[in-house]
Image (cartoon, rainbow over all chains, first blue to last red):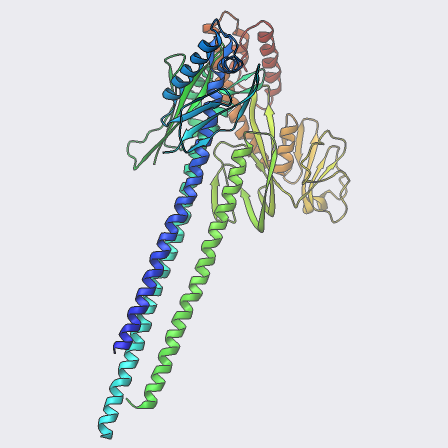
Length: 145
Length: 159
Length: 290
């Protein structure tokens, strides 16, 4: 009688173990799938941000992209010297990031300036701009919490 | 003694049979329960995948909406990567043709040049179980002034 | 209980238990296959819908290559995979044959602009099907994977037969049995299988008719296109109102044109007039309508 009981108990334990492992495996599988879709969302958002920032009108017919090119090329822009222009560009972009995003973000023009900081985030595609001193890659990154 | 032996054996045999029956019965019950859970999980996962895909399509709207011909800016037939604010009011009047079966709200507000906002579509139901909202920066174009600003496109979904 | 009876009872019990267990496994296998089929149908439908989303923003083509043949049914505002999974088309403008049975589907897009951009028309094409273009025509820019044949069909050929001259009445009935027959006659498209006629305006709508294969499917997509066109007309009318109140330019003619109700018959005139007015505004340094 003890042997039979032992067998039954053993069987029950094995089945319960398999079910529990299966449930954990399913949870991991589902959560990894949904993670990929959120990355795509943040990537589109980052692309929209770069596009909106570069087009914004800052001085007459001139856009932020023109101001950034002047800043990175060390040139005067809209009656401001190079340093004043760069301070203006950084200040305006900070304002835009603050008002248009719920998340933290990083806006970078390589070899020129970086606004914001985060360890992990989803980046946009890079947008090339050409200044007097060379080409610069402009991109944004939406920070992940 | 023989009588006693036979009695003993009979009890042992009955016990063995009962044990076997019990084991098989429990095994079948567990198997049955496992199969029911498995099928229910599979059915639920198909439904969940469909919902996830609807969520994904909702998220895609932050890219699809600004590029719709009905709101995007253009010059001499060439589409630009911005939203033409002069089209937004016109689109509000026909937006139900595009989103009529969706319990959604769509709005845009300028956060840089001007303090302006547009309610493009509002189909908020009286009762709902859950609410999802997403937002994205967008480029706005004012055609008369020929100026670009930054706006925030907000999309809300009531389930 | 006697020993013999005990053994018999055991065997009966084993057989009954065995049958029950086998029945469970058989049911499980059948139900499992059904569920897997449903999942596969959902995957195919989502793959196609994803292509529609991606391609409606650009003009190019992409294909889905499945490991098995599936059935695609087009029902105007939705499509169905294997009579099982239904996927809504939302606001996309799709042109497809009523039913496609294939393991290889191509989605191709072409812009419809008259004179403003309206939509990218999405064509659902069976890559196993052959398209015969008979007679002189200007259609030459097809994706390489499409089977395009510019010769007259032979006796046993099947596919879609598009005539750019009057088709020979001899053998026409036999041709209709082997596929869809379309006659492009001036600005009209005659679907000879159903005996109905429709209009087309440019290459994009001509291709739409070819890949729809028959009147009903073409008309469905065409109606959705015309609805979108009318909405855009209203939006541009509102825009011209907005521009006229805030600028010194004269938008009265543009407003007059945009006020007209547009239908199949006057669309080309409307398009030409609006395009001329838009150009005039641009030349005068005014903000254009589109």
